[in-house]
Length: 139
Image (cartoon, rainbow, N blue to C red; front, side, top):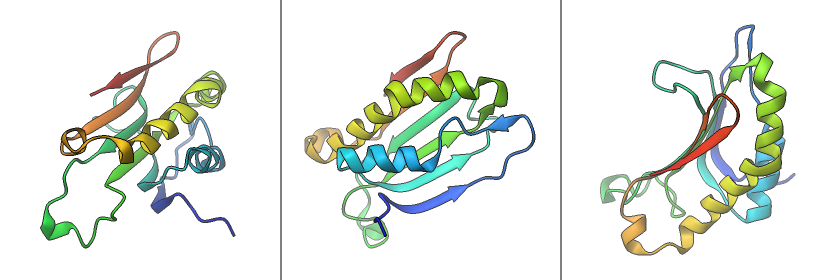
């Protein structure tokens, strides 16, 4: 059995009209190819705060010593794939497969090689839906 490139995994059940644009196997494949792992992979239904987010990767920055035993040595990386309207699944799924999942996995893999100053702060790699494509916000 292949080791999962995440420590925790969750998947929300979805109501009719919503779908996940890609599956867990693709994410697992691209993370493994990049030599990357995350603390948590979540497939989530949208809420008031997610807006038009499709893929959200969050790096926590320095972890206080009081939680260092709980957080793995390879960092505190959260990866969340949001459900989207079912009618958009094919177009968004194709764009994720063709471009973005591999780019996300490479960003995650590069976290380990970033300097202490970068790693000490919070960072986010966020894909959002726009009318004609996905757009990336890095903060």
